[in-house]
Image (cartoon, rainbow, N blue to C red):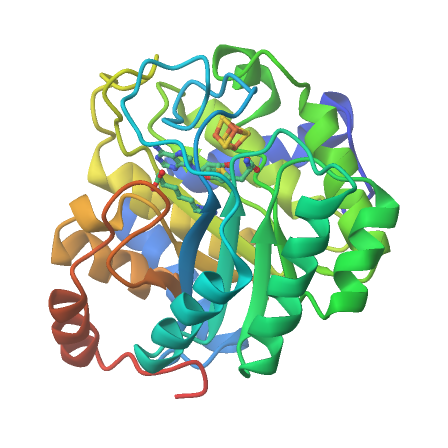
Length: 323
Ligand code: SAM
Ligand code: DTB
Ligand code: SF4
């Protein structure tokens, strides 16, 4: 597969076709191959757990059609200014006690601005690291000097999703370009922070757009270390809130193809897991998903119930990150 650095459609064309062929394969063959690849590169009993907190909620100037935090949406959510450092660190302590190994702080910002708020986020990162947790933030677009400051504060991962294929992107968001996302990912990479980037399934896209997304992710140079696969959580009041749910096998296919195309990455079964049956989750874990969001909440929506999660992980023999 071509591995050149790409930001154009043409240069990913070969691997888009390859990704599409994977998605089209008979499901059981695809899952078998993905499970085989998974076992070549990872401990199949290991499960990485990230816990999320929304450090600044709502009022975002972007118009992402799936997001309740967009100021353009009519979703009824409580806007909250940037949290205090002490409150964030209390949440991080609770997350650690609940078994999380990474703490991910999300802000409903279009982009990072230098100033007091950014200084406070840096303080949060230092505090989370001091607790012995990996630190991740997702703050929207950023520039290289900001990525460098995050690295100096000890940040392990920056989350910035490509969300969908380039050709479908303008149906989902109009206030930024696909290349803006790629530029932020490049700034993160150049600062030496590990990259967490993935997408959302079930926005009304087809297999072609999912193949494009997978090929784009696999063609990042180097490929991302962490790949969240979200499934749309339909939010009342958002443009995409009434989109019919995606068939379960499409989620499994996408996870399996991600595992094959990104053999070394952590593939995170992310938002939408709470609405999935145990059987669908199980197939996703078999197909190579090896990371989840833990805890009761994502950013503004509930996550899978903790008691139910633990029972499922125990049944499947999935342990902690080094299991
Ligand atoms: N503002 C930052 C940004 O967009 O990068 C960070 C926060 S944003 C909420 C992080 C990611 O959450 C989005 O890129 C999207 O993939 C995911 N997300 C947001 N709303 C979602 C929803 N309703 N269902 C599933 N995933 C969602
Ligand atoms: C990611 O890929 N998924 C997370 C995290 N990165 C920031 C966010 C999921 C949000 C789900 C909807 C909500 O709770 O608002
Ligand atoms: Fe803003 Fe992020 Fe929501 Fe888009 S996904 S509206 S950038 S918070």
